[in-house]
Length: 494
Image (cartoon, rainbow, N blue to C red; front, side, top):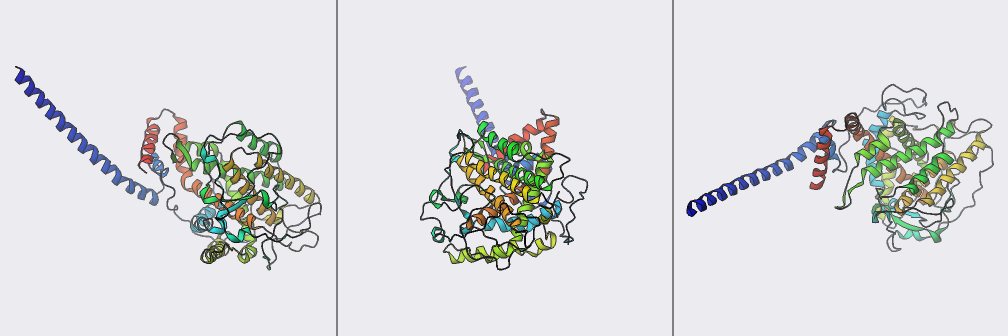
């Protein structure tokens, strides 16, 4: 009897072992099959517009994908007619600009984004000089950062380019504040570049000539991403920007200058939110980074005005870059590395004089229509003061890395404003443009940040919106939770 029981027991063990082996083989086949399917699904995502949440989940683990189906470039009329807007979501002319959404998306994907991505990696544009330690001029600094990723890695003096260490000549620039300026000239002096100089930007608050308190930072080692900076301190910054210095204009607002300032700040805010969501700490315990689609939708995509303002800010900054083409072409991008410096010069020329860009969107924004009438000069001083206050608020940001990117992008916007509105209206002649190398670095990096945000919105926005709207309509839908689990599993494979 005992022998029979032992025999039956051994038989059960053998059966169980066989079942386990078969189950293990099936699991291995399943893993192999999933592994094989992932590249196929990614390839399908490249070729077609993705409408399923699975492909959307896969995107969170992939930093980029091929551009969507291209639109044909159209030869826009060089005269700017910005009053009409076609029906439909993000179609027709971008409000207050001279290019349509379809053209912006295609030119950005095919021309601007690839060039800018290469440009900001060059030695000249990767090092930014910044004053990180400043007292907040408005309230005691109470910001706290949860993550080590909030801190900034400063460059040792031996790392950044030798020419950056040389003092630039100062130039006594006649202050234009208080002078009546009734018109804006679109042109700049063709003999533009006369060497880098140190001069303050009237649109920003930082003393850019105070080298003693400034340090160089490698932007590639300090990417703009999620840092954990949140709570009352972070909210107070944006509240101060919008309520005190940049209130949203009413629907009946007829002053274009006030609309421009608000839309620039709103567009920058949208871009920052997109970059935080696109590079987000999904799991702090395992240090798993990816895309937070819910955050991207809640902060930006579900508000059409925020997306439209992002496109507006992108075209505004692009206009500043193209207007200063002669200056930027002639500028000396000297870092002591001849090969890299020649590459930088070549990339800059490709950006400034690309035939596709010139044919599709020759004048992204028409600045000549601003500051008109008797109140023009007074209004300009008022808005300039408001923007300087916004610039000063960057010293109140409690997160070091957030402060770095806030200062860089606000300086970039201030540089765009300086380029577009640097005209003496008395004699209608182009004002001599004077830029610091740090201003050009900020301007190009800002354009790259906006370009990347526009690309993300164009390529991923529709799929994210469909997924989130479906979940909002039925929060308990099992499909949404299932795809979220798949997304998290796929992320762990990378």
